[in-house]
Image 1 (cartoon, rainbow, N blue to C red):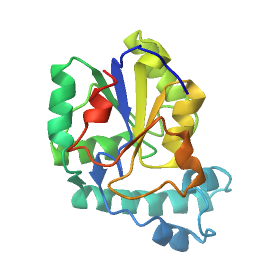
Image 2: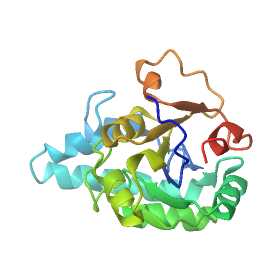
Image 3: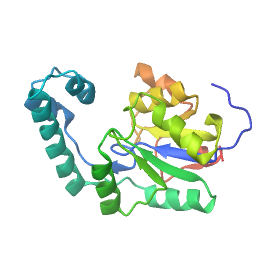
Image 4: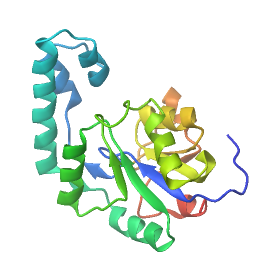
Length: 200
C-alpha cells in the first residue's frame, strides 16, 4: 500500500503482545472453555447460548485479571511514547480486552494514552470501526493514522480502515506467516524505532 508523503499524526496501539507482555495463555483458556485449538475466543463466545457463554466470559475475565498482575511494558515503550508525545502525535489503545482490564494494565505499567477502546466500546478487531472512530474524533484522515500490533487482527483492522499498518515482531521473524504481508512496516523493537519515526 502506498501513502506518499502524508505524515503520521496519530498512532493506535494494540495492548497485549505489543505495548505489554501479560503472558496470557490463550490455549489454556480454550481448554478450560472446551474450544478447539486456534478458535478466536471472543467470536466463539458470541455464538454460544447462555449459560455457557457467561461461564466462558468468567474464564476469560479470570485469566485477563491475572494478566494484569503479571504485565510488564515491552522494552523501549516508555521512551518511544515520550518521543511521540514530544512530536505531538495523538496516541490511543485499541484492544480486544475489556476497557477496565486495559486501563488497569496501563496503570500498572505506567503508560498513559489519550483514549482506550475495549471490546465493550466497539466491535472487536479485525472490525475497523474503532479505528475509524479514532480518526473521526481526532479529525484526521485514515492515511494520517497507523495501527500497530503483533497479530493478524491488528493488521486486518488497519487495512480495512485504510490506515497504515505496523507489525511489532518483538525480534521474531514472522515473514513466513501469510498475514505478515498485511503490514506496511515490520518493527522488531521499540528501542530502535527509526523506521516508525521516519513516517512522522
